Amino acid sequence: AEEDGVLVLTEKNFDEAISANKHILVEFYAPWCGHCKALAPEYAKAAAKLKEEGSEVKLAKVDATVNKDVASKFGVRGYPTLKFFVDGKDKEYSGGRKSPEIVSWLLKKPGVP
Image (tube, rainbow, N blue to C red):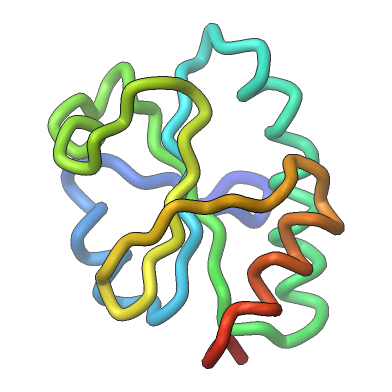
């Protein structure tokens, strides 16, 4: 499923999405989290910008309060937690929370088209 250009992941489709996308940034969020709500429109804008630029990088989100197994597998303790997966291996996301910052952080990574 997709919402505002962002893939919506659950425990059922998480592994499949990670293996289907070489570069994918995943946001683990909680619906009640204020920082997550503030990030949502910026995250959607970043997804649109990447698509517009023809990038292969995908943005995805997981409701960590419902999909607890996936969240605990990746050591999610606070919200939002963002992890960048390259060929199935996760790295911490250390960029900003605004759309241009998300896009530039992703496109600066080596090997990211």
